[in-house]
Amino acid sequence: MANEWNAEEVKKVIDVASEKIPELLNSLSDVLYGKDAASKYAQAIASFYKTLRDSGMTDEQAFTLTEQYMSSLNLGGIFAKAGPWGRHKDEEKD
Image 1 (tube, rainbow, N blue to C red):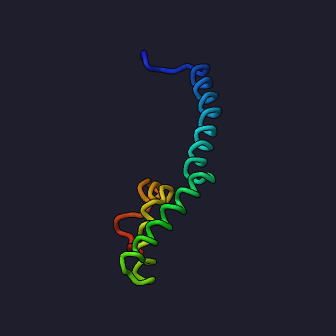
Image 2 (image 1 turned 60 degrees about the vertical axis):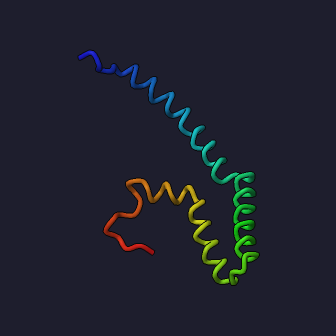
Image 3 (image 1 turned 60 degrees about the horizontal axis):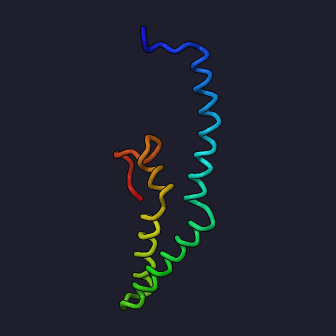
């Protein structure tokens, strides 16, 4: 077959993947969980909560909506639920 790989080609692909994948995961981790991302995340949440309070909501109402907002910004959690390892349709929701 024309699409068969020989052992040397497979080795090259695995070598490149083993070098590049950790770099990619580290970069992604920095984007999601680095100091700059955490600061922006905190500022967005604080601003959201303050806006709710300034509009007349009680502490409890603002807190509940802010928790929901925080969940929507949690990309790691979203990816985990979206993948095959995430929640199944037949499982109960929180």
